Length: 481
Image (cartoon, rainbow, N blue to C red; front, side):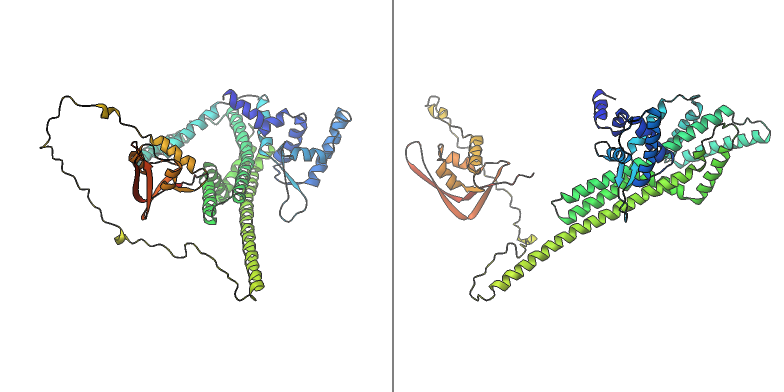
């Protein structure tokens, strides 16, 4: 990680802020015991305040009166404040009492603290086997060649046959105590990380729901586009790696066969003599997984229902506004109905569609090539006046375009004749033709063949010149935000 990334994490990470808090031991010890060790996902404010009050009383008795001077409710309010972010305070549906749940930052901070504790031994062999298994699954799981997959299955069958033969002959060694404890250590660590991941998945779904509500509240487009965008986002949730992995895990866990197999394995592992200090929580950890998964699914369902109600409220508010406008029109109509000669007029734009049939389009007209006859060219004189070649002038189109932009600053469009009256031509007809060829992102040139304008100018000899041409208008283009 780079210096800037670490600095940003130090400023924004809630887990880092929790570790730097003055009362971090109290926060992590109490919330870790209530929400992580007991796998509680929703605790009422009264229950949590009562347990924290007992904790504060015991700590003040042991560390001295005034060590934690605030009340339990005040501490809970501080921890649930958005500037802290250690607790999530919410009101369940149909309840007037607030409930609390720990945020993923508490899980992350506790996981980092656990990594600081010394372990009796660090197992490496079981993790190496896990790495090999993962690599085999990735390599052969992605294999599209049937023959290659069959070859891998035959190899595994040969290994199983050879192992069965050795076992039948009594030539095998059971897994030793060290290997058993190493695998049990890895199992407990993975099981705890899995429970912590559920809380983070739930928090990610809540963050996504909050973004959708913000988008709905600030949406300025059509309802159809809004619904397309929202439905697309909802589908993208299921299509993300996190969504697919969570759904696959939940489907796997809901299988009755898998549950029976998992319960049997857990019971046998907890009863192994080599596991001298089994974690009692691991005996029924699959129940904790099911409970946490069901709560995450319930959160997704609840968020979807709330989002639907939020959309319904938006539609209801817009319909109510339409009804108010209609009633206002009816009220004004009733007020003026006594005046028979009241001139009431209105203009409707686009009351009929403009049809453009394919056969109305002009056919392609090939360009006529003008013949060039160079047979009658005669040799010129060697000596002649060349002053005319040096008297040529240049029309700067960029300057002309800048003049058009300045003219459009105070209006939406301007005709070429009006523009020439404001900015007289200085280079005569050449400048007039250059106006017709202007191209710029800030305006467009519109030709109206049905109307004719006259443009006047004074040439270099002082003669008044006049040109008739179809009306040319420079219109300001709309700049997209």
